[in-house]
Length: 262
Image (cartoon, rainbow, N blue to C red):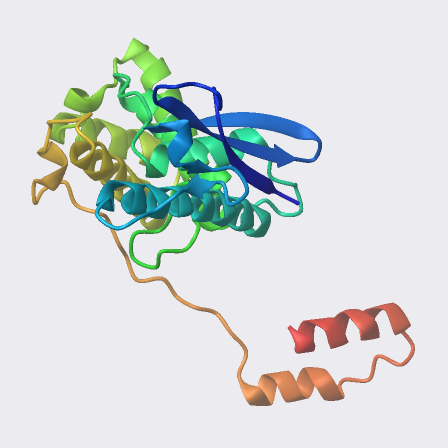
């Protein structure tokens, strides 16, 4: 269970001293900077909050901020419990989540592949949420991200093509579509899905300041789609299968029953 408390770095100091947040989980400990300072005479060590008194709105605001930090850590812990498929969250997970929410992540220059890798990692950890639903990215979607990235790297390796944000243009669109059709031998709808993800990556990178190229918004940078035939059995055909005598073949009978249930 996650344990959280706040304390002063120098509780006996006569000047302002930093307030430290300490998290304890599975026997591990981690200090997290609140980026707040306070004079020890204004600190209540039992409540682990600032002493508030009339006429000092700053201390009241500080307590609200500390409470928000506490709730943010608890939210991170609970969200990771739900998305890690049984793996217990660790302090590093919680720190990265909090850093992201508090905009404490250093803005490192990332190229196209580096940004794509980071987006997949954030989706896997649960930090990145679906902007439409507010829920974690599903495992199936993450697998599609990984497959799209693999195809892009393989395409980049053929002919030693350089791929960065500025290279995602209409020329890339034509060459990459041809590669996916003829070399990777993917269906039209699958190619469309990969192009849709590339447009998503470009848009997120644009919003976050890593990308300035908007070629993917060109109307000729289309997401391919084609109607596919859905093959299914009607009720009469299912009824015929159900009534077919397989009593001499118990194994086939079980397979038939499983098929009908499906």
